[in-house]
Length: 309
Image (cartoon, rainbow, N blue to C red; front, side, top):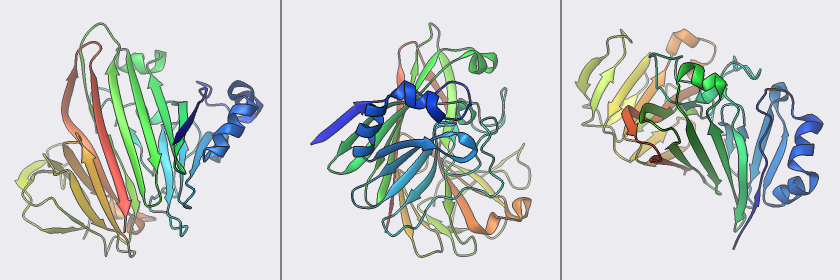
């Protein structure tokens, strides 16, 4: 049987959690949340962090800044997500690693790179537990900062579910404006990997947009390989990708990446552009490259399910 508790949001500013958040959320609510496998604390840089713990031993961490999942550990303590050593936790720059949001724009375009969803404060709206597995729901709404770049009213809901060997998310974007809008989006997932041994299966036959050597003028092609490796710089979009991919991270784990309604995929490794860490991760991203058009009160929903074996 599932039990739940509603949670109050963090401050819309980037100030440390401290006593102010405890006052807003209420000590009793925090105790209840902890019993559900959810803990709110001060993370790196004083940013509010939500920790999830399954009764089966798996763990996850989510920063409210950017709504960014920065850690997903199996019961054996092994973290399958990667945060870059140059990541900054200052409440201004997006967190480089984990599972950042690209919204309402993927890549370059009229507004800042990858949009603003990854450098705004999300709110913790709800928490529940089902048979020992915790779930939290984060939300993001437009404000003066977002409207200075993208002048629309919206509501984003991000549901994160932790299980013993899996981490699932449901992203819902709702148009709360009085006029239609369009957007693109992605989950820019960084996986721990040995880049020389990592490989991805499931993309053969997809139309590709290869950004190497010229990111501003990607070359269209077709993926002919059953197994895709990372021999050097990789930055490639796969259009109309299947709803299941297999990542061998080269570290002894095979990660299944399933999705619903994320129509595209992206593979990325910066190679020598990030000489200090490129050998330790690969990005396998679920994405919606083509524009999603939403009329007022319409919603778009996409799910991601990653599991390890």
